[in-house]
Length: 195
Image (tube, rainbow, N blue to C red):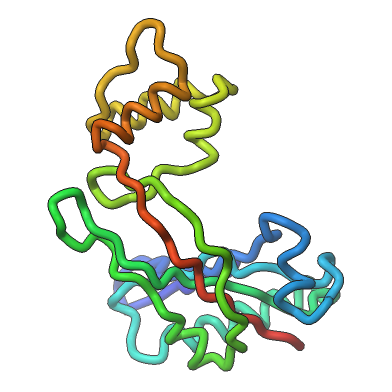
């Protein structure tokens, strides 16, 4: 991980951005997006966030330093992949909750466009946030953490689970009631960098 700290006179340092590198969800990602590169030689830029107050060109400046820090720390790494989500989402009442990203920063930082990830179906909550599929799976299967997932849905306004209702039936009912809305996502845009 790499952070952008801003120090202004007579003020505390401010964490103004973070680049988080991680292992991709599956080992197939690195070879698929980096022309057959061994999975152990690539990482994913899983998150890249900067405050809006960071001056112009701060994104590419921060990415350059984060990539350099990664290469100095993990000398075996030969490539990085990342995704951006182009699909805007709305709240249940039609307000835009997420405008989507098309990779402007990654293009400016000479990322190679690698196409799209597979299209998929997401479930959106009334505020436009995506209901975490792993969490819903825990709820459907009664796995450890299912109670936590159910509590979070209730906090966001979901109706209570019925006494004899299975987790699968509960999630299905939340879709039928409109609390969870089906959203057909076209797939994220993939970028890569090699060195």
